[in-house]
Image (tube, rainbow, N blue to C red):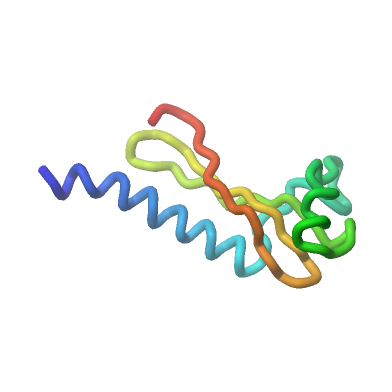
Length: 97
């Protein structure tokens, strides 16, 4: 019973780690920023904290992961294309947990 109880959270954690690796490797899927329809809403705050130009920053997402319980998650963050730096990653979950 313990193995079953820990398998689901472990599976989700491993998926999140894979998503982080995806974002750190190449910035993932760009969803806001230069060349996109949506600007990065937090651009002034990002530049104040991390520096860089407006054109350096993108909001990014990983590919989606569907867990055994049916919930879906992605990891979002901000990617500086000039420095190849990922900042403020967070897990976004949708669906039934």
